[in-house]
Image (tube, rainbow, N blue to C red; front, side, top):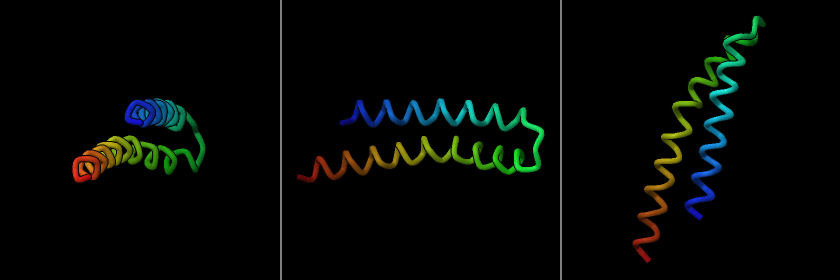
Length: 63
């Protein structure tokens, strides 16, 4: 379960890094907003994955 979650998290992060690069190179009016959201998610996704891992460990050790 943990390996699958880690793999999914890594794939999401790689996709977010690629999206951030693509949005930075685009010359559209929407590109700057997409870039900001992408940078925010690049920061938020690892934090959420870490939080989910802590919650999982806590709930698993409680049983």
